[in-house]
Image (cartoon, rainbow, N blue to C red):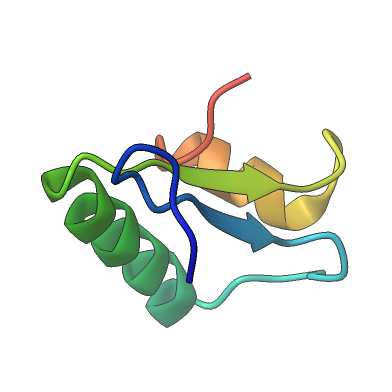
Length: 64
């Protein structure tokens, strides 16, 4: 695993996700929190109009 200046980037690609169960939303929130606690960033990738990203926007896990 490589890093830039001690930062370990994490990219979550939801490009093929049609739906997200509540357990998936919880897991994404927990991963983002753990990653941020160590000074790292979680990036979520998806089409802007994808159903999965809309759910994450509603719960505050994805910005525009």
